[in-house]
Image (cartoon, rainbow, N blue to C red; front, side, top):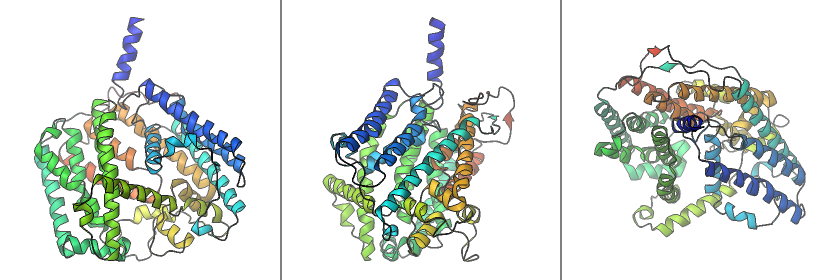
Length: 500
């Protein structure tokens, strides 16, 4: 009994994904039961249905949530916080709670579970037609999840290797060179646009139009943060070095300064936390609490600052004189705006292929053609967001991302959902086995972090992934953290080799 107990503790301590304690597993299950099953059922029983297909939508929503939580319901010791089956779910829960801060109190609210759906792309549709589209959409999401699990557990196993551990060379100097060059390019770019104020003022004509053709510059400027992330992952003492913190101070905000992207700031913090978790294999709950609240306030503050540029005159007072109360109000307004914003998922399900033709892979082709300048190929394929804005919402200057399920459906109808998500499951299985085969290889940690976080089966996310992973691999080779040689001996057995 003592040997078995010691072995089980050893497995938990050496889990490269970071084991989830039983208390957290219990909390997730309780959340599923109370908020996603019991509460919706009670609401439908207490308040009479006010819209069509209420019970059908309730039943399908429960099925979908049960499928979504399957890795938690049947949690295994091989899983963990960063396991590909678990991490996307936790990220989704975090986003849902952030976008609906009052959701945890909704268990005491017995208003109707479903209400009328309004979408500016479906203003000529009757409510029963929109409700029917919602039913079809849930069915597509269920199908996507089923195919993902089939691909993960029973799909072909892509071969993984155990890569040799190597010593890095001059990592601090090399990383600082990359950071310096990226910041120098940032300074040159802002100067070429007339300075920071003029650059922000140009957003009044729309960032898509104002920044057109500058995508390659933004990608290179982002190299600075990627280099800093690699430094953090490879060097366990990086956080003790002043130059590391200086690098973060300038590289994390760079994407907002150039493109106005606030999410990149939050993403950067999440990537650093993922790196910390891979190294320590502990639960970063305290760090999330420390960093989470200020990040939310910063997102609200930067959102209000960005809105001030729409008038053509930057209001610097928003940043200079903002209080915590102001930032909280800005964030609340941001959430309200998102609730009112258009969704591209439902209109695609409702209109494709009866009113709008299939895209036949155009959005996925845009991943391959991204690096071809539009000046050379004016009509090259675009991402799904651009097509949704133009063909679904009749907006030529607005991109509205529809999400991975709708994008697969729009390209190849139901077979597209089946194939895309089956392959996504296969890819995630390979990613999990890659880390298991190289649990202590810091270079593989970098690849794992960027792949797990950025790789999603949508064209725009895959482009973003390539923009992160290609320079990361190049930097890893430059600092000698990654080599062509690999160890063929002692390769770990394939993860879940029995199809589980």
